[in-house]
Length: 114
Length: 115
Image 1 (cartoon, rainbow over the protein chains, first blue to last red):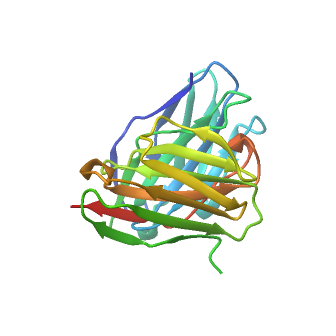
Image 2: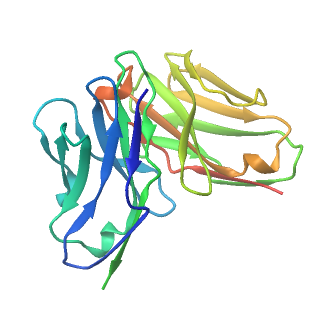
């Protein structure tokens, strides 16, 4: 079975400061990992994905994430937060070769203070 | 041009009614999905179709019935609506099956409120 845990339900940062969203996963197989962002009243949009290539993955809008197998983590970071980064962020894992399902984390709400 | 479009965006109805949500994608993808997002923002897959074939059917009440007339459309019909059905329903599509090497493209959601 696969699962994902987002360690923070809510993160609040000041504009221009770094953002860190933490995600741990559990999987019996080599996972594919994703971060999605959901802005208010919108659908989810893919930020970045890891699929067994480079462990440091760069995504859109200046976000990046690092896959650490030894720590079973896939934390999302951004060096400098912008007001437009205020949104809900989901860490997602897919692990079994024949499993069509993705497992979503519970989400982290990011607020950005001016 | 919207890639994945859902209608209606908002739906308010009484308990016991039957309602449908429609979804269309113009991306040429082979696989489509319905997800339910509850009030705590938790996302759970309900159904998935690949080229009109049902490939994922999670444990949902049989009051929920998906229908895929062609690979660009996936509709969700709900009979005898209950209060607990209130949620945001997202349609999504992906090129690949399974989706673990690709991305999902989501619609903007349909907010269902059952009174």
